[in-house]
Amino acid sequence: MIFLRYESFRGYLRMFPVTSAIIAINLIVFFYDKWVAGGELLARGMFIESPFDPYGLNEPWRYVTSIFLHGGYEHLFFNMFAILVFAPPLERMLKSGRYALFFLLCGIGGNALSAVVETGVSASVGASGAIYGVYGAYLYLATMKKTLDEASRKTVYTILVFGVIYSLVAANVDLWAHVGGGIAGFVFALIYDRSLSARR
Image: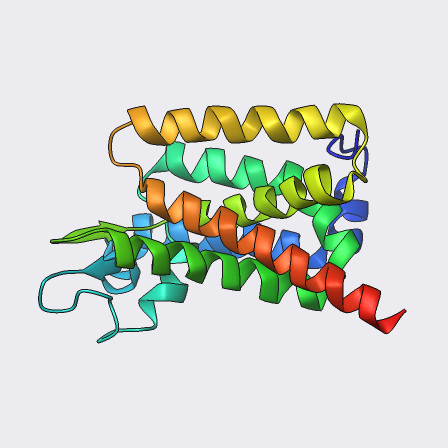
């Protein structure tokens, strides 16, 4: 089971520096905005689309900044827990630099699909698109490569099924950002795997 974590705190920081940095940035940004900035970072960084800017391209930085912002304590907790538990094996597989790029591109991909599908005015924040990118990469490993052990494979399937159901029934959840991130993660894993095969 690759998702069980046994490292000490220092060991975790040393082995998974990008995952640790992502969690730290999210926590710092959230509490600074909550306690000091009075929500200014959330207002300036959330991903927004409207009939006047249907794809959010007038302020493109929001495709990235929204990944590191959260709407409340529960939102932050569940996303950080998911990153804490599920991101480390993928960072180890990809190595830190590639994993950092992967995480950002999956978050951007989630926002991009949401922008294409959604109409009218919408605003979204959170690392969920990038997190579903992580799940998408594991889905590729589970279905196309079949390299995950049975327990890990079942965990991935369970997370994705419950995640889709939750995204459909819960209020204020950007389903298309989750789908977009998952697709991006699956595709990036495929591309990376093919590139490794080509080098061999």
